[in-house]
Every structure is written in structure tokens, then in C-alpha cells.
Image 1 (cartoon, rainbow, N blue to C red):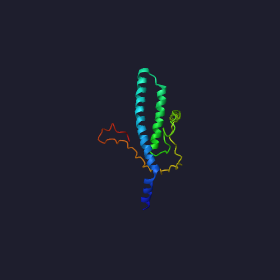
Image 2 (image 1 turned 90 degrees about the horizontal axis):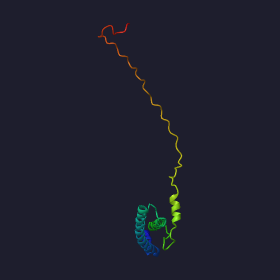
Image 3 (image 1 turned 60 degrees about the vertical axis):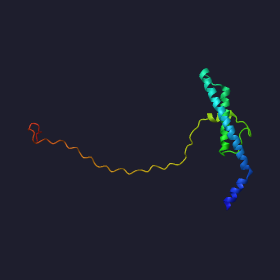
Length: 147
């Protein structure tokens, strides 16, 4: 009974339905951004192919579009409640570039190590001495060592 009331209040909540409308809007804007990013990538490739240089203005556009797409995806996946452009500010490409340029290191685990348990020394079997080859009794006496 309690779950039914909870579901009923969530279904009647206008903020949930408004979020759905925003999500639909941002999915459409995401598709547009994908097309523009594809065009930027093709243009940048052709620029490097024919001139050997990257176009700085297009680089900045690509950075800011990447930041915008990131914001849209964060909103669509419920990781943030802040709405991206046009409801919020256009992302600053310089801030994203500064984050991307930071060296990334894996976090170190600070768990205490247990001292290694000493294993008891394995009991070794004494090596058997190699026996010298016995003189063959069938050989002539010359080969035998004097006794």
C-alpha cells in the first residue's frame, strides 16, 4: 500500500514531467551537437591534410562542444540537476581543457600490509652420494687399480 502511494505521488509530480520535457529537448540538442561535431572533425581533418595545421578557432569550438555534450549527458543520466545551455551558461572550453591537460594518476591504496608469514623451511632429503663406477670384474687385470 505504501509503495502504491509513493508511485502515485511521483506520477502526479509536475517536476518529474517537466524534467521529461527538458530531457526530450536536450536529446534533440544532443543530436544537433553530434552533427556539428562530425562536421568539425571532418573540417579539422581536411585542414590538417591540406595545410598541415590545425585551425585554432575550430579547436576551441570542438572543445566547447565536447564540454556541452558532457553537460547534456550528465543531465540526461540524472548525474546533475543543472540544465545545460540554453537553460544554463555555455560551457567554457578553457576550463575543460585545463581539466583534460592535468596528468591523471591512479589513486593509491592506503591499506596496511600484513607482514608476510614465514614459511617453515622445507625439510630437505640428504643427497645420495654418487657412487664411483665399480671396476668391472670381467676386464683384464691391467685396467684394475692395484689393491
